[in-house]
Image (cartoon, rainbow over all chains, first blue to last red):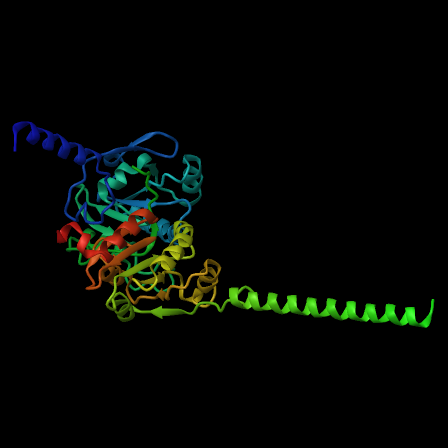
Length: 197
Length: 193
């Protein structure tokens, strides 16, 4: 292969890498990975940083949606868990990455349902970074920003027959210094409505 | 008017009425026959939606000698409903060449209500299931390592059960067709060249 064709191939590969859309993939951001601090605007447009919002025992990032029926089923439970663990130094941060939901809609929905901040992830870049695909989907980080648990809030979206409160169990384990037994759990929900890239 | 003229007029009217009646009857029969052929006059039987548990899901995801296409959806999922008409068309196009099933994630209470109602409206003929898993996490893991539970999710397995393609979110039909065609023509697949 000539030097010219090698250079051409290298450039082509680089372009292919740059142009490849970042798709959400559940395996992208594994448990144990450290999250770099980041800032996103809240529903009033004010920039908020993760490290400023984080509690002394960490924070939960939960991907939400204003229209997803599954999120609506979970809203009351999410608010209750957030209230219960706020006092224990774990804060909640909502993220809305759905390009189909207007800022005004997200703002109204957040005001009606949550007492914690909801940040707007325009262009779903943050969802891409974590590989988030579904709403609701939770990421629990400790005080050092290490991911301890990722996935569903519990094992029953209807809330009528919960036998595993994954998120609460993860919190309680971490707060009592025990290893979290189940660090990953999936559940059915709505897809994050990404922009076409 | 003479009696003969009256009789002639009467006979003519009788023949006219007889011909008209016969013609109308014939048309009605033909119309009924056409309707029967097109199926328009016969009400569609609502599709039967079968319940799946984890064991049933495993069995349903095992191909029976043909590529298997599976669409996970729910009536509460807007993009699922939006893409459904295209999936119904695709089913008609590939009927006999692949097996295509749909699995709803609606509540069990909808198995004889909204789920068959929607499928009926869509004129869907694919075998339809509703998954009520003992553990959603386990069910999702059975489907694919690339599945995190977000709907819609469409997955194509080859005849041996190996994952050939998946799509999280609304399917791009041209891509799915290309993947199906690739799978149905293994000799043209780059891997076999």
